[in-house]
Image (cartoon, rainbow, N blue to C red; front, side, top):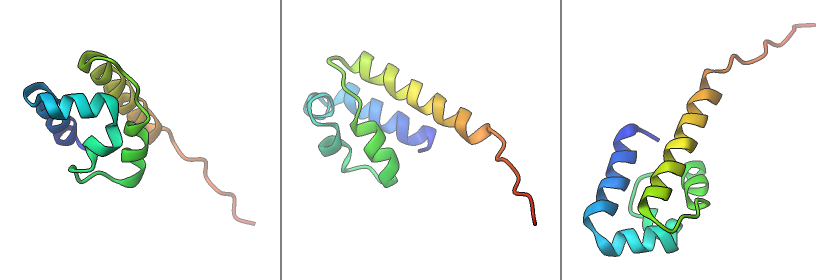
Length: 80
């Protein structure tokens, strides 16, 4: 997921009451309009929050944790 996707999701939620309400009550349905990878959609849809602030905090935490996972070196395979 790109930073642009994050901005678009949160920005839409800030200005569109209907989208925000759906995002908080049924994230998978709300996020269907965005071009997200299946794994991103699954992960973000699992966020449970009662306010947009809570949702955004969890979204940023999720994104930061993914960046850490991407940065971890992969163990090398030993050829035999």
